[in-house]
Length: 442
Image 1 (cartoon, rainbow, N blue to C red):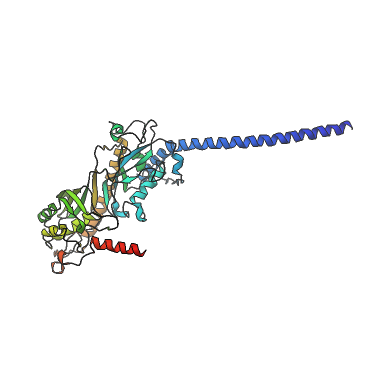
Image 2 (cartoon, helix red, strand yellow):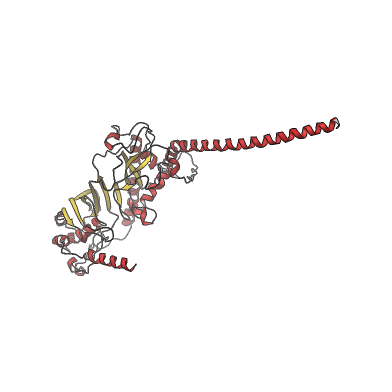
């Protein structure tokens, strides 16, 4: 064999060895790349919730407040969806959030009604945007104090759930609310400013006004000691003293089946305890008309109970019914509710929910931002009211015949049918029998 041929064979052998080595290196490189990718994912999952969520809250807060640092509009960035399960390695704590909202544009508080927008759906969107949720609704042990209906507002709604925390030494499962509530109004040092972060992304008609650490056995619904509602109305053509006398008859424990919308499928007892009732003037007048408010407090309320009570009180205040109709409707022998329209929903507000030992926290920065936000909203609505008043003044004067109430109930005594003489709705027993029959047929 010639020297040249032997050299070619050696070169081919070296090439084959090099090719094999390259394949081995490529396999090792693939393994290392896979490991490195997993490490980077974990780093990003840890870093994003801590840094990005709060920055995002601040950015959205600036945008919502209408700050104009330049003439150009800020480009809004769409927040990508994320799986709450990837946050499970983060510390968490069980907290109660105090929520304020103005219900005019919402289909009630609960998102279970399958109607958007709802207050609850907007809150959960904000929780996902800020990366505060850890787990699904069942895992976060979510509860709410009340389910306000379409158009109803609240200043003291309370929800409870597990949220992401920065304090790694907190065992949220075992701590008591009394042990975790700090003395400082700003909250524990180093903890997430839940009020500021959430208000930075919530719509302007929903605000978190405070938060409080609670024990894991706390329920926003069942731990509530009392709920207080306020119903605003103009006092035109109403005998307020007679209304208050009638309202006092509601105090105590009674069967309120004739003062609610009956839900025979889910509610089986209609006894409720009203703790207090009061009618008082508000600090607002318009063209000589005085605004008043009914304040009613109870342990718990039935579906539409307050609006039904107010509707009957309006009839009494107009002289269409006597205060004794309250006694008749509370009588358990009156099994069927007379048919009547509820009072409008817009003037109704869930004023407060009372809990034992809860001290809601709000940082000074978040509190100041809340004040500024509400002051700006008040000014905006005052401007709108001024525009409507100017429009009213521009019209030709009308006659002074006042035969209708500004509460939306036309005063026509001749056409009024007494409540106890009206057609009635089915009784609870009749509704249950119908449900059982339908169940058997199914």
